[in-house]
Amino acid sequence: MIIVQREDFEVGIELKRLTEGNNEIGGVCSFIGLVRDSPEKESLEAMTLQHYPGMTEKELNRIDDEAHSRWPLEASLIIHRYGRLQPGEQIVLVATASAHRKAAFEGCEFLIDFLKTRAPFWKKEDYGLVTEWVGSLEADNRATEKWYE
Amino acid sequence: MIIVQREDFEVGIELKRLTEGNNEIGGVCSFIGLVRDSPEKESLEAMTLQHYPGMTEKELNRIDDEAHSRWPLEASLIIHRYGRLQPGEQIVLVATASAHRKAAFEGCEFLIDFLKTRAPFWKKEDYGLVTEWVGSLEADNRATEKWYE
Amino acid sequence: MKILYFAWVRDKIGLDSEEFDLPSEIVTAGEFIEWFKTRGDTYAEVIGASDTVKMAINQEYAGPENAISNEDEVALFPPVTGGKY
Amino acid sequence: MKILYFAWVRDKIGLDSEEFDLPSEIVTAGEFIEWFKTRGDTYAEVIGASDTVKMAINQEYAGPENAISNEDEVALFPPVTGGKY
Image 1 (cartoon, each protein chain N blue to C red):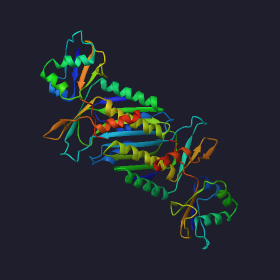
Image 2: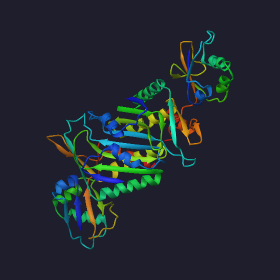
Image 3: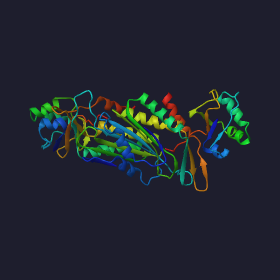
Image 4: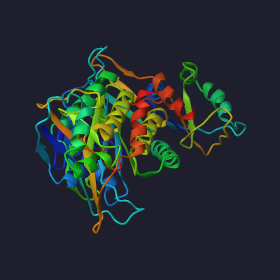
């Protein structure tokens, strides 16, 4: 399931819904991405995520299909927010459910790595006096490349 | 934080508590282990987890300390249940919080791998007419060994 | 043709989207980019400012060799960025 | 000495725990196991039934070379098992 929304989400409710009624699920791996302060810079007041409605959902579905083709996942979920978010707020939830934990962990890490490099989101950071669009992170591109090794 | 209890837990509440007030956390990885049915066998009615009170907490604390020494974790949590559990019920929650997702994923997978091979829990499966204590799983031992490679 | 802009490309051009008539001799994304630059200084700057402006045709990532036509939805944007997790 | 049993070891012996007086000449876990087997058929069976009975001394995993004394808390149990996740 793919959800792109401005509103916050309740992790407990979402994970419960993911596994309900399927007793062949042995493990659920999830990742929550949060708005993080930059201790090295001046204090972050907020970040604004802009996205490309339509293409975002298409790319997330493509990434999700790819994960299901690579691992025996019983269920998966991506919820991604957009709009203005404060430090500490939830940005994204990715979750995978499988009979065994190895597939769940690998599928979940694959989803978040690919999401960060493929899903059309752009981030503007607001430091009070300065706001700036953030460039792509080399580290994320490296994390995606490892899946092709 | 280490918790060993008979009662169920609320994943959403526990994860919120883990990150509250720390804006240097960028990601939270969690794993939930559930009581899984065995499609290959007759239907599982329940499983009973017995543990060694005192030693369980000691081993879990040791595993947790080891994870913090290997990865830059801002926070971590292990909740493990004991007693009689039905298929679909939650057994364990492991969660790690870090600035970046890589440390969170690796730390979380390390915790659950070690927990399964080191923490003194024993499982009795109840198939209605038959109940049996389950032996150790070779696959789990292999999962632990990889951390020493 | 509908063309959408995102992030700093949107701020620089000052519009979320525009409608163009694409000359019929333009049939690849590479040719589109060359033609787009001739529309004005700001357009040339957006393309020239950086090697990193990306393109999507009908909501899929596209390269210079991809086919393009006046019925397509095109988007120009910087490399994607998410949270710092 | 307090000795605790878990899982099928507990079922076989029929007790959660027992109090023993450990002979003072027994100073290693390996010697303890040999002595434990002599306490009766069930005890011998528990030790002999499988290579896989594990031991803890004072709530830490122990091997045959570890020191042991009458003040210790000892536990005997099968290899640990958790859920099938």
